[in-house]
Image (cartoon, rainbow, N blue to C red; front, side, top):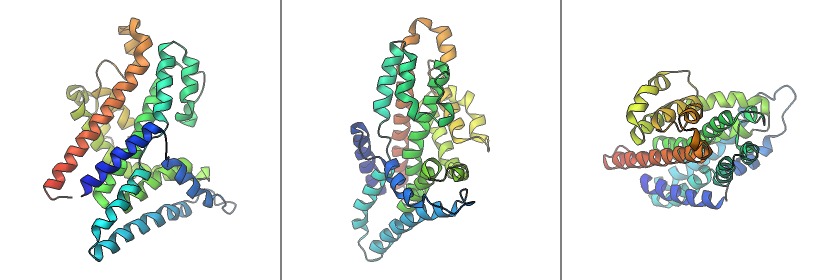
Length: 295
């Protein structure tokens, strides 16, 4: 049933994303608002935030355990579907990327920047950055968002159940939205630990779903590099797996100057297609594990 549960949740979540409704980020933000007040000098403490994440994770895991104990395990599946739908999702991205690609096509880089500035990391929102830098920053943010809100949740749900999926997704939310900004870097370090295995598995999947020869030439260092950050692994692996210099705007502009106006839309489309194919590979792998009785 784990495969069926995830498939239903994934399809529902994709539909909600297309409609730009039900944001898991907003749910976490409202939940964390209760932790907005801390004693002076303890702004960098992480224990309170971990409790805010651990409590719903524990309650969800306990609920599933109790109904299974009484022989009603099937009754927990709707709950798991609902929770996965709430934990996953990237609403708003489609509504930002579409106008961005159109502005790029029109050569209006300032308008393109305005469409996606809120999607970029705070340190990379400078309006004076070059189009190449802006596009790579956006591509990195897109892949990281999809990884954290789909692949990461799927991996830990398959490994440890709904409770672990909630906890890991909560760590990501803490790193992005915990009211005390001083504590976020410490949560981010915790995220890198829980990302380590799934992001490298996704890197391998990029090679399977994309250009394997290109991936082999680029991604060995990314996978074996213990200290490589999640975003670095994603960018290096995707760059090797995509053809046509989809993540190399400088080389693309030099080789195909006449097609530069279409680069923004084509590049993002290639990235999205790679992520979609990779999720299909994961679903097939999960199906094989279910058939083999591993999960």
